[in-house]
Image (cartoon, rainbow, N blue to C red):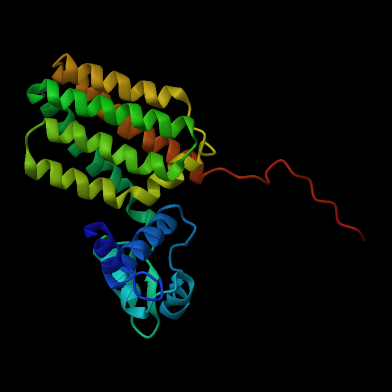
Length: 243
């Protein structure tokens, strides 16, 4: 009987999601679409269309948009409305610098302070990341990559660094989507091997190697992204004009 009452609190009489449940559903769906770049940077978000699409009132939609704004994924533009937050590529070099510095500190501290419980959590997260890679699940890779790296950060026992690292990883989620796209969403096993090497250094308490691997990881993301942004698909085409 208690389970039936619980269900009724989540659903309205007509079978549609109640306010809180609907807001979570809309938030999670829109977040996935923004992170996958299905919703493009700068694209207008129409509340009425979303309410109709998800079969909810506009109130849960607004609540979902507030949560997306708190994560920096949407913005309110005067005289225009809510739009998907722009992807500022001009800031990419600064982003990689911040990622590099914080990641090196995080990995070094993880190697210094990790426990057996930390290692178990890190390895479990890495196993799940590898399974997402094998499934070519880009969104799953993005989520699991963050879980893995935060498990490493938590092993370092520095809450402020962990919170800073979390914010940096969150800010780079759409850039990471482009990074995965540069591989055609089919990541080579060598990238999983890189995680294995990082974990091995942390397990061995080798701070110097852990820091070096953290730097190499950030540099690989940087170089791969630059190559992707510089790719052209028409340079080897010949164009014939009829006269």
